[in-house]
Every structure is written in C-alpha cells, then in structure tokens.
Length: 288
Image 1 (cartoon, helix red, strand yellow):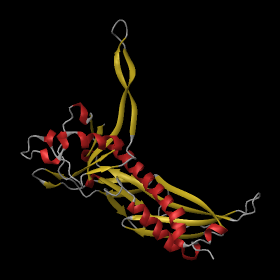
Image 2 (image 1 turned 120 degrees about the vertical axis):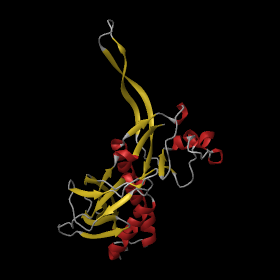
Image 3 (image 1 turned 180 degrees about the vertical axis):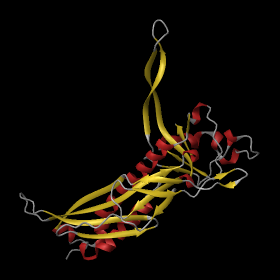
C-alpha cells in the first residue's frame, strides 16, 4: 500500500505547513497571494501596504511590478519499500527535510532581494554604528551579528533611553530581532585605495566587508506567490496546497525501474513560484 500517494493532497498540505513554520525572513514580510495561475518569469502588480513615519501616520503604499523569478524546487526519490512506511515516518524522513530546504531557499531569496533593493547602507555596530529609528521595524541578523548584539551593552533593553535623542542606545526587544543563517554575505568589495605615481590615476583594490544584517519595515517588502499550472504529462499525480498566502505544488512522476537494482522509483517534487517586491525607503543594510 502506498502511504503517500493514497492521499497526495494531505502530503502537499503537510509539506506547506512545514515550509511555513520554518520561515524566518519570509515569514515577517507581507504575503501577496492571488489565485491566478502563473508561469516562471511572469510579472504581477503588487501593492505594498505602506510604512509608518513619525508624526504623519501611515504613508500610502507603493505599487510595484514583481517578476516571479524564483522557482523554488526540491525533489526526493522513493522506492516501493519506502512508500510502504507509515505516513508519519515518510513525513519525518522525506517531507519535513524537503520542506525545510524549501523554507531556507525562500529566506535566501527574500533576503537577497531586500539587500539588492535597500535604500541605504551603513557600517557595523562594533565600529561606532548608531542604530537608526527602530520603531515598528524588524532587524534580521546572521548568527555572528546576533552574538555581537547580545554582548554589546548599547543594545541591551534595560539600558535603553527613550527620550527621542539617544538612538544609538535604542533597545532591540524580542519580536524585533530575528536570526537567519541565510543572510547575504559579502566577503570583499571593490574600492579606491590610492593613485599611481603621478597622482593622476585611481587604483582599485578590494576590502573585506562581512555579513549583512537588514533593518526594515515589514510593510516595505512583499512576497508575491502564485500557483503553478497543472502538469500535463502522462502518469503524473499532483496536488496543490494553499495556506497563509503561500502556494505549493507536489507532483509524483515515475522514475525507474533502475537498470541495476530493478527497483521501481517515484520522484516526488515540491515546487513554489514567488517573487519579491521592495520599497527601498523602508530597508537598510547593515554590514556586520
């Protein structure tokens, strides 16, 4: 008895729930979902909710065109013996690891496009960095930066000042700081380091930068997600699951028998189609 393909919809729903529960950066931004089948490379309009600014309330959101450029995919093979296992065992050994890989890929994509579209950049907290206004914003940091913030007294909540002037002493509370190991990394950057002998020509070199942290207003970033079309292929089983602004397609295709072992395999594939839209004014990159 095939415990997985007997209820493929349940398997797809389970996979999407694991994807959702393992998101970090992507789980903090606006989800823009419409029940409109799209293809990879399509462009869809997305309206950002708008950001808060001091004294004037909510600013109207921008409409941005988002290319559905990120086709996140993860596959695994199962033979007939593995497919006879209990559904719980299949989830533990196959579906959950695949869903975690999908979530990490989505986070990398979201953080990458946020970094590319950020409106400003600044140096590291350890170099005299003054934290900008953090009201209503999230800070996503890589593991090393998280450790640095914990050790830096300037960012300790009990020592914060709230008189509106000491922003360098602003506190970062639980619920504002998130650690994501998928933060972009910049190891080197081109820079001007001098001139030639007569002082007329600039000489280009490289300098070390480090990991990126991202400070952003959640209403400045949107993940557009659209359902993929059904596959019209022979002997393909499939199911689409939609939940909390995300859509995932699970397909099963024959893959075998193996000419050496004579085992019959099936390929299970999880797929999601997404794109990221940003308002540069609401995002800042911090090199850490």
